[in-house]
Image 1 (cartoon, rainbow, N blue to C red):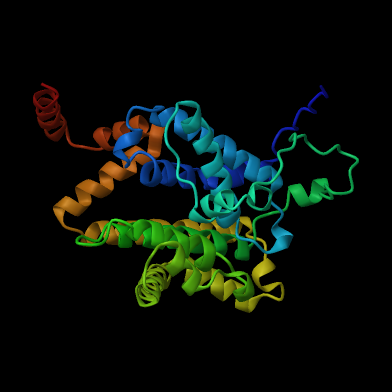
Image 2: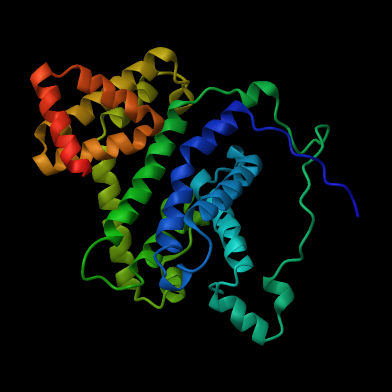
Length: 318
């Protein structure tokens, strides 16, 4: 048996790409695995997310931006493969595409099931690597930020549209196929046709077309009300580099300020229930920093309010 070459550590830019797309792993595990009753007895959520993150890291290692494929469309199949691997080890049933089933019945396994091979990291001297230290440390550009925002808007639209009441049970499957095979593919010639997606999901062409139109409307609404998107587009139009304009410290601070202003504006105009949800989500997203945030807010209260809040918190804690 040959020895496997150990893989090098991720670069700073690759680590940033992993951190920015952890939500993709959680979204897949939540919507495609844990919501199926027959999978409840299988691996725990943390195990699934861990395997999905390994698939995400593998996708980051192999991703080549120059090919023009959006990272989400490139990474999602590898995340699915990693999660399915641990599900298979627990003896859980897995979905097999109808095309593969038909090919197996016709004895055409070689056409649809590729031969396996040992995965080893390419040596540093290989010309296929082609990444210099400078390219690994490339600063984030306006185009990078806009693409990341567009990808998040796509999946937010999928989630919102899938949560609509009174819809067919296979609605999410159609929406996710539209996202991966059409909305996240920039080149028209590389997009899967609506007719093919309709055949794959046993849906009518009109239904699939309607779903895509709704997704596009939701995406346009999200991006149209995002002040950061507007600022990034203005910067791209006003610089010679266009979308390749690097995001310097000044622009980064300006974008952060716009995000804070947008969040506070929504909070000020929200109902009490909306505010409670926003604060809860903010604390959840803060992670270990939540205690510091709570400490700062508590310290800013008047003494009588602190005493009252302390009594109420004791009562809520039982």
